[in-house]
Amino acid sequence: MTAPSPGTANPVPPNGPRASVILVIGGDGPAPVRPAWMLIGPALTALLGVYLLAVTIGPGGSAMRMALQLPDSAIPWSFVAYLLPALLATPLGFLLGRRWPTALTLPAAVLLILGSLLTTLAPGSGSLLFGRALTGIAAGAAWGVTAVLVAQLRAQRAWAMPLVAGAAVLALGFGAVAGALLTRGLTWRTPFLLAVPLEVVAVLATAVTGIVVLTRRPSGPVQPPAAPLV
Image (cartoon, rainbow, N blue to C red; front, side):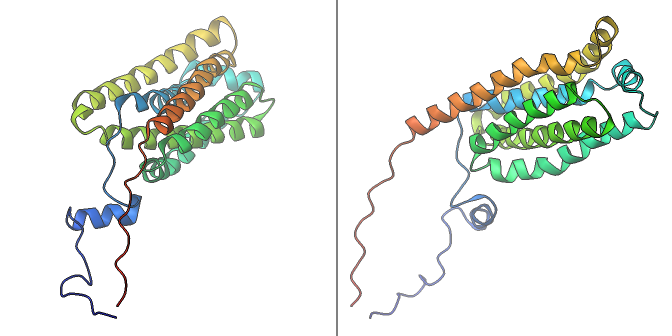
């Protein structure tokens, strides 16, 4: 068997050391360039996660505490039960979302629906905190996927990044206002229940974009036959 030619034992990636780091962290090669429409499902899921974070701020949280006859410490714990899992899930969404954005966003959007329904129907503090934790995990995963998709837009990143950031600020403000107004007019459960139809839309949008990506994916190049070992 012939010996390898000099300089081929440890080939250097064509894009330099940075490509090696990408290879280890995210997959087999440089980061792909994503189309902008792939952001629809993950971004909508992420924005709904921001909204659900904010609905317990102010009168919404106070009405929840009074209706369920919870102690004063229940509302901060409800906020922590949402935010802490979300912060832990965001890096995971960023790392895995680089290679499998649809495969990660789809279960996250479904989990967001489940968490919202559990929160809406919660009879006490235990089920309330569990529902908030589920929605936090789903929201954090969607935040990570959305961030990595914006980074993969390359040329379109200049307008996508401020657009997503501005929409997140609006979702945060809208969640606080909706939580206050809907709670006063109806019940504290209403803001959570109204998010469910939009979460269903997020699931459908994510599934459709995933199907489109699969149908548009080109077949790989034909590999040349390997050289015989002599």
